[in-house]
Image (cartoon, rainbow, N blue to C red):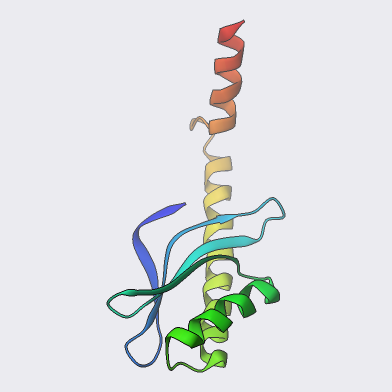
Length: 116
């Protein structure tokens, strides 16, 4: 899901974490494009937010770009991950409950059937 306005989590020293896009992976875990921003893009990465190794990789690179404590970034990533998991799962439930909405998978099946 690409957000029309990136999600933003304020950090110290004028930095923010921005999330312009997020989705659930095949295991149902939130994955996000996370950007460290302070008026200019300082760092960007795709992160499976519940994955500690992925968070550590992002944090290791981010602290080289900013004077922000690693634990502050860790807390922000955990908060974003929890919020995204709820939001993305709700979006899936809403789509599943709306039977009149054609999903991409349904449309692909229809196209395949029409081709025969």
